[in-house]
Image 1 (tube, rainbow over the protein chains, first blue to last red):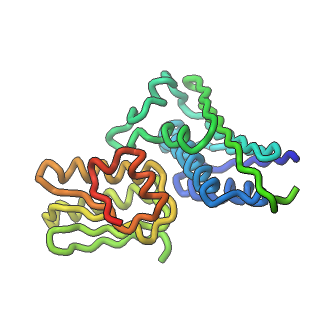
Image 2: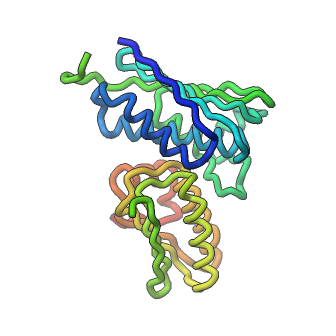
Length: 145
Length: 104
């Protein structure tokens, strides 16, 4: 079984909730556990927030969320065409934040890492950032095939 | 109303009833209002009430650390109450239990 979806929305913080609702709905017919849904929603929320406040620096732009289900493997890309990240490794360090004045906790990538199985970040300064995440969902007996 | 945040001053405590979902979108308002009240009402401690909260991302951690920094130098304390299992786990895994007292 293979399923795909793509959602493009304005880089506006109101849309963090939209992205969470859409990804939860997309994975629903796999009969995921409540914890799995919460894990994915948290990771998506972190990635989309980063795109809005870091990628686009709260200016206008579009965030794209692509999701793919391959059997019980969920793959998500959150893509922005914003400023990009100069040093991805540094950005991914726990507690590192480029915006201490915004009271960002510096936990965004740590949460994505903690709640998903795979996390990779591709970024080019001036071109944008793609966050790729994967999560293997548990197999369920009563899952629709 | 869903998504609303309530603020109340009880003795020396600023009690913040957190919204259903805590993300960056809601965080801005909570931070601003909390800081206004901390200054205007001169309260020492902050209580975050998570009773209505079913979702929180790292923005919630940012709110807590920020308030802790503002009040701890005056001897104030930060408390978290009524957090469900998941939110308690998030507070613990992010090291928040060293800055706030979690009361279940």
